[in-house]
Length: 466
Image 1 (cartoon, rainbow, N blue to C red):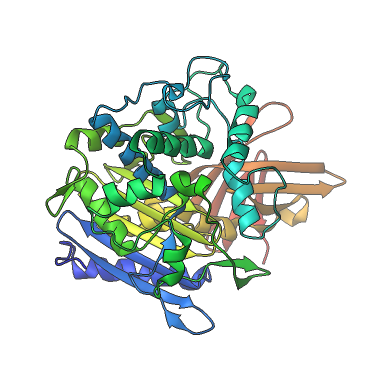
Image 2: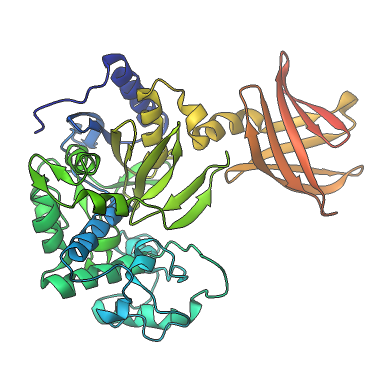
């Protein structure tokens, strides 16, 4: 247990708890947990049940899978070995394990794998194993041991992209290989190394990769997935191939200790895990993963995603492993962090709920800071049937991914179907873009009026019908 609490006002904490409580209710999440931390301490809350049938409540100490939030732990382990002189991040991977000797192009380096910048696209390893071990549409490819894994990786090497500058492919198998490097240099299993060198010094005594330890722990979240809209008990994919990319189970209270170590420059309660310079290295971007709809680039460091957020820098990662989803992140200048975990896969993933909580703690509106929430609010309001003056032209607007689709099928307009990509999401007007068959990029605008919502497209002004 943490002896101190973060220096956050009660009103801000209450707003964050209200948001998470509403999220759990609206997205029909069986159970969720949240912690807020700064360099000085942690406060944590729980919502809903860890066992639905028994109605046993979740607690801030409830264990859940953290998925790809595990990747930054792998990054810390690699940097520990680098600090000890056992490797350098620019070393070729093949100096330590035989994984990429037949890969086309320049040698794949440890840095390439840490930052998903090797040019190797996903080989589907994690997707196949997770589906198989959860009993969900198993992909019947050989992945039942270390030799299967090595052949799976080797046979996919020709997929490597070498003709594009700085390609980004989210590559889980690369983190499994990093785990093998850790094992080769430490003489321990990946799980043993992380527990001894990271978890134990930070007092993360219940965090684990072990199925036996998890099942023996009374305060654990039943893994649920949604089937026909109902929460259905499932199983967690315990497999060593998933350990380094996403196999840890932890609680928000213990994840807060990990986050505080990062905020404190690699040290917590007198225990140093990494020198401050290595913490800085871990969060320095190497590649760009994507760009958000508001134009913000989301970059990738060593198992961390990094982006601008409310005039600060957000260092974070999300994790999803079907039955469990998680987020852990912190703001560098504000020295404020959040961890969020839940079971099932809700519409609003913890990687969006977590930044929303940070926005509230800073006194900002979540929808203005988190594009997903702005889309979640706007898109349902904009979908429906639209008609022009006297019904001469009619369009249907429907959801399509993170945007909309405009459709019409009339004798006057013929068949029309256009994807609408969000460009500017305001409070009362929303601008989307589309590309017509002519090759023209055309704006499509929605505007809230006293009577409802109007749609502007080319020569037309249409009104949403009740």
